[in-house]
Amino acid sequence: MQVIPPTFRSCFISAGEPSGDLLAADLVRAFHFRERGIQFEGLAGHLMQQAGVRVLWPLEKLSAMGLIDVLKQAPRLRILERNILARIDRNPPDLAILVDYPGFHFRLAEQLKLRKIPVIQYVAPKVWAWGASRVSRLKRDFELVLGILPFEKDFFIRHQVPWHYVGCPHLARIESVRRSRRELALPESGRLIACLPGSRMTEVRRILPVLARLRRRFHALADDITFAVPVAGNLPFQQVLQLLPQEEREGMCFVRGESLALMKLADLAIVASGTATLECALAGTPMLVVYLMDALSYRLARRKVRIQWVSLVNLCLGREAVPEYIQEIDEVRMVEHMQNLLAPGPVREKQLNSFRELRLLLGSQPGADEAAKLILRHMSDHKNQGATGEQF
Image (cartoon, rainbow, N blue to C red; front, side, top):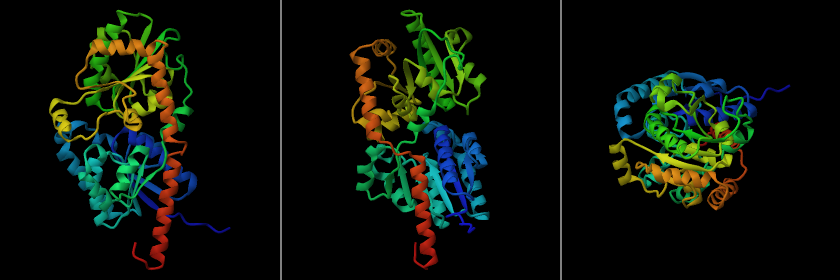
C-alpha cells in the first residue's frame, strides 16, 4: 500500500485570545481529519493543546484590551516575539497560520515573510473598522486571508486582498451543545439571564460591577430571575468572584466555562461585544450588548474607528438589530430594554427574526473544514510549483 506524504509536515500556529484558541483548535482537528502527519506547535491555549498542538507559549501572554493594556504589555510582547522568531530560525516550519489578533500577528507575519515562510490568516482582521491603512500589510505579508464574516467581501476584494469566505465556524458548535440547567447547577424554574462579561480580566473587571447593579435593579422588579455568569476557562475562578463583594454576589450564579450552554438555556443575555454576540444570535437568545474600555483608549478609538456599531450581529446585518450600550451605561434604560426583550411580544420577536435572517446570511459552510481544505490546496499548489522550478 502506497503511503502518501502529507501536503506539509510542520506548521506554526498562533492564537491571541480564548476565542482564537477555540477556532484554531477546530481548524487543527479539521486538518487531522483530512491529512495525517502534520505537526502543529506554537502560541496556544488549552483547547489547541487538546486538539494536538504542542504549546510552546501559552496564549495568556497576549491577553490585552485597549491601548493602555497594550502599552503596558508592549515590552513583554516584544520579548515574546523575539523568542518565537528565535525558535522559528532554529526549526523553520513549512507554514504559519495566524488566528485573528492582528496587532501582534501583523508584526509577526512581516518577519515570517522575510524568512520565506508562507503565512495564512484565519479569521480576517477587522481592518475595515480602522480604515484602509492596514490593508497593504495584509496584501504584502499574507498568502491567504480566510474570513468568517460575509459582509467583509466587498471591502477586501476592493483592496485586492486574497480573501476567501469559509463560512461561520460557530454554528455547528452551538448546535452540538446539549446541557440542562440541572447539569450546570442552576435553578430549574424561573427565568434565566446569561451575563457574559468577556474572556479578558480587564473586560470582566469593568463589566461585572455593571451586571451586579443591573441584577439589583431587576430583582426589585421581579424575584423569579437568575443571573448566571460563565467564567472563561483561562481566568482564575476565585479571582473573578472576588471582584465583587460577597453581598453583591448573592443572587448571581457563577459557572466555570459553559458560555454556549448558558446562551442556549437563557431567556435573555447581556453580552460584552465580540464573538459572543454572534454566538448568542446563532443560539437564538435575545440580547443587549455592553462595551467598556478605559477612557483614553475609547477616546482614541472614536477618532479612528470607521464603523457605526460594535457588535458583529449589527455589523453583519447592517442595522441595529440588538441594542448597544457603549462606554456610557444607562442602567434605567437597560432594565427597560431587558423587560421588553424578556416578555413575549413584538420587541422580542423582531430581534429573533433578525437572528433568523443572520443564519441565512452566514450560510451553511462549515468554517474550519472549508479553511483546512483551502489551505491544503494552497500548499499543494505551492509544493507542485516548487517541484517544477516555478517561482511561487
